[in-house]
Length: 109
Image (tube, rainbow, N blue to C red):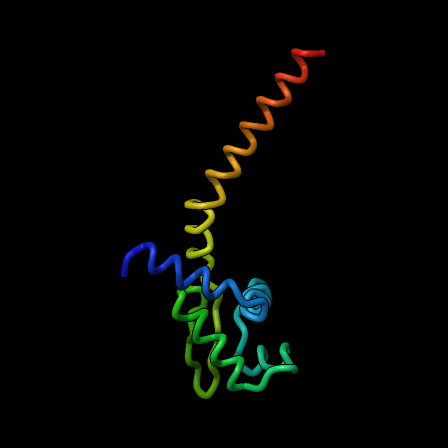
């Protein structure tokens, strides 16, 4: 799979607010699917599983079976890769522009 295809899966996974909330819930630590279902009472178990499937396909969640339980773990590395590719360079550019603007304003005073 190409990098662009992988990025598409990540952006698709992050595009839905429920999936972003699921990732937020998993930041505190791994959770069972049942725990996530309880966290989202407005959704049935099948819908929670579908959202988890999208997150897994994007590599944002890793599922581990322990007996009858399925533990879901956050994998933040794909988000970090997106940050490094897209956010970091733009933030550096914006910071540079603001610094230049500040210097120009101080010179004109």
